[in-house]
Image 1 (cartoon, helix red, strand yellow):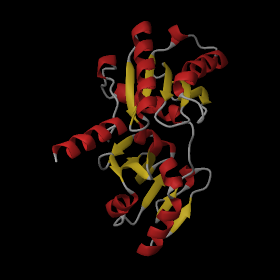
Image 2: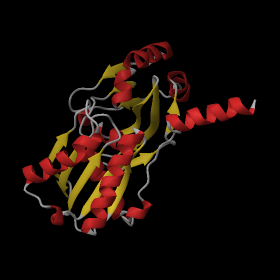
Image 3: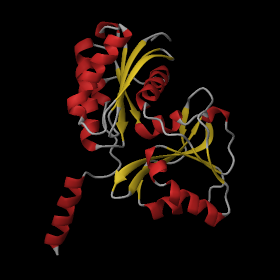
Length: 256
């Protein structure tokens, strides 16, 4: 696939979500979703809007991409099903991109970034990653579903971290307290995280447009040998669904 391929990417793992159209590394247009409305009601509308605003037709799209999780169970299913259907219709490859990688990439280059997304009940999805200046993301640990206390225990020994994502902003008061407890400097990054250096704990600005990061990461994955086979596009849930948790609890109680 050439460097100027047209990419249509979606992110439905978060409540708001987004859609992006790119040509290689150049962003042509995007649409940020509505956190108060289901992706089932807005995704196709937002895709149509981006197509119209960029004057790109679906047959011009050479690569489809979607955030693959973790995130909202329902949102992920809607996004992945839509991208798979478009892949089959257009006969073009589709690639899944872990949501936490997109969160880290949006926060700029850093040797140690912790991407956080809310997982409900005050808990978070968390993962430590490094992001190079050219946007390549490397996993430094595995994505996990954690309580705030588990999050602190997992990363309390780290002296230099860039905290990023909606989950970081929801927990910024706790992050500041933990940093103070450990004698670590805590600061808010400016609007351009690329100008920052790795010092102490830093809170990166939150990005609502993760679909554009999904596009860039998808192109990298294809260059690195991802087949783009829609049959391989699966959700990364990290934790069981609420229904599964209730079923397991019921079975455990019944077994007693």
